[in-house]
Structure formats: structure tokens, C-alpha cells
Image 1 (cartoon, rainbow, N blue to C red):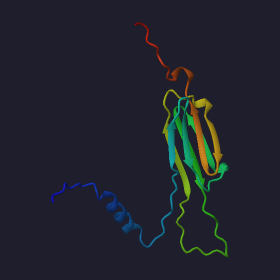
Image 2 (cartoon, helix red, strand yellow):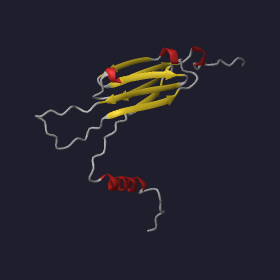
Image 3 (tube, rainbow, N blue to C red):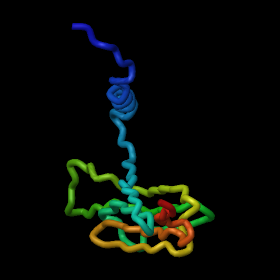
Image 4 (cartoon, rainbow, N blue to C red):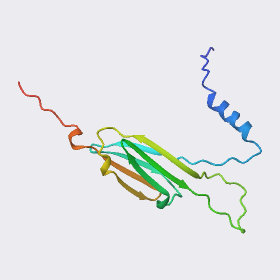
Length: 139
């Protein structure tokens, strides 16, 4: 049976092996980038970011023009004399995520809440930009 060769099929495996060859034998710092869902509702855009282990005071949210910036840091637990780690897999470090806001978002009215490690940002749409149903006149 013949199959079509896809030159990009093994690209991610090759990249992992390539990076692994340079990192063996030395510790490399873990990096943390939160996963974010962006959802559009009728009256707002809603962003939900998974930030487990991040403290509220370590989160910074800014809107500059039409760019929303989410910055923060998940800190590594400090090791004490009694703890001896055999392996550390949970990532940590500083992160920055940015989004270009659409023109129909009211950037001055962004609402943020943080509960159970999930940051929720609600970006309301401008009133004049909301979709409305147009009635058709005639027979």
C-alpha cells in the first residue's frame, strides 16, 4: 500500500529530540505559560486563565490602548532543610500574555475575578456595537 509522505509529520518529535540533545546534563529553568480560553458572549468577551499556585498579588492586568496584558509569576516553593526533592516537574516562573482587543470592546470597563486558581476577565462590548436583529418591511 502506498502512502503520501508528509515532511512535517515528525517535526515536533524532531524538535523535542533536538532540544533534548542540548539540555542533557544541565538543569534548565522551567517556564510557565498559563492556558487561556477566550469566549464570546452576546454582551462581552470572556477570558479564563488557569493560574494554579499563583497568588492574587502576583498577577498584573493592564489595558494600554487596545492591548490587554496579563503578567504574573508562579514562584517555586522554597526548599527547606527537611525537604529533599528527587524530581521537580511543576513549572514556575514569570509569564506575559497579550491580546489585541477588538474595537467593539469597552476597555475601561474590564472586570476581573480570581477564584480557585482561575482568573476570569470580562470585557464588555460597546452598546452601539452589539448585534441587533433587523426587521424586514413589506409583503
